[in-house]
Image (cartoon, rainbow, N blue to C red):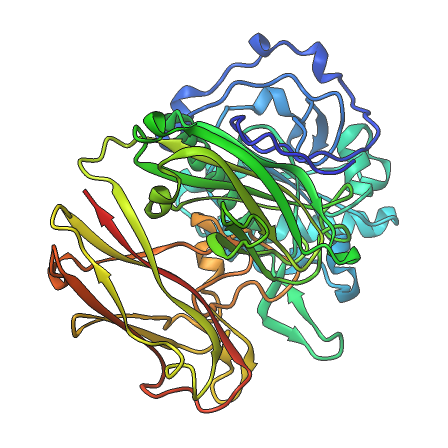
Length: 539
């Protein structure tokens, strides 16, 4: 079944099809039977959520049913250990996504893994081996590695991790219930997030462990911690979205944009609130699910990171859709959901009524997208948005093609911002530009310079370090590296610079722009800059 998201709901729901089989039917378990651990959650500064009745299906994104697994410390039953604020990871000694590497991630990295793992995480280790002797040896090595790792911690931390790291004694091959079903097929490993939804575990690949013979990056158990870090980010995001009490405007609902058949754009006609109601809002967000046809992630989601874009069509010429409203970079082989602020563009919609949007992708995705309108109660809000400069081929003629422009700033302006969305693309020498090189984008406002640059471009773990703010973790590609203004599996945020002091209110103001590499125009062709920039007036 194709993945579907109802983003007006509190959480994303990823749909797929598997047979439902469990040791105890979750529908037989009343929520009142599960006691939330308020003290535990409060100590971690987390808000508990009640145990939920399971979905009818066992599938990616569905609500997990109760289950029981035998461990070296006794039975682990989800409902019995459920606190309302924990994440759960069920992992193999030889994950399917890394079987060509032969060695189990359990053999190393346990101290670093525990150090990186959020404290509100239970990890259940289960063997995917078939030979009972090999299973016993694998679990014995695992037990030794865990004890050595936690033995160096404080007594309190030792107690904590002994209660959160579980060695499952039943091999995956004979494991009953829905957990066994999913651990065998698709076999990626299972996560259960803080909303009790079933997730798949992604790649363990580490950029520091390239194996030339396999032309691939070797696994590192520490990467597994990224899954729980991301689940915690999502929980914070959901709490924020619930607090906003936004007006939701659906634009695309699980629409398949099928580039395999030459369809790079999907179109949607929507109706926004009228002008009187639009005037009540000071904030605008885009909520996007990049879903994939099929039942999973790896194998169903496209392989490459690529640019996704939401564009506003001309009201008089609806086939011309050039005004960019949002930009994202897709994932390597994983589902992604992003919510980001584009409030500086609110003036484009102030009259309300009917608008047409186009969504661009050069790979096949199933797109669900909502606009979120709400008020933060700001003293001032955007009233005018005037676009100024766009990007293009980044070469020796790049700056010559971008002429100065004039913008009249009204005398009533309380604040003026220069807003830009800039990403560099291509792998051209010198500098591996513009994806992995640091470029400078200099905007002149009446002769005063305002710069943007990307020193993180090429940094080995820059994008991985942003998992806790929304980068989709553990993608099946080189997702870790910092780029020129972007990360795979992440929205491209608007940069907002306050230029109020540099403008002359009530007059025409000159704006100039130039893009530079090491202080000079880029000398050769082959690189590209994608840029949207605008002057935004607040009153």
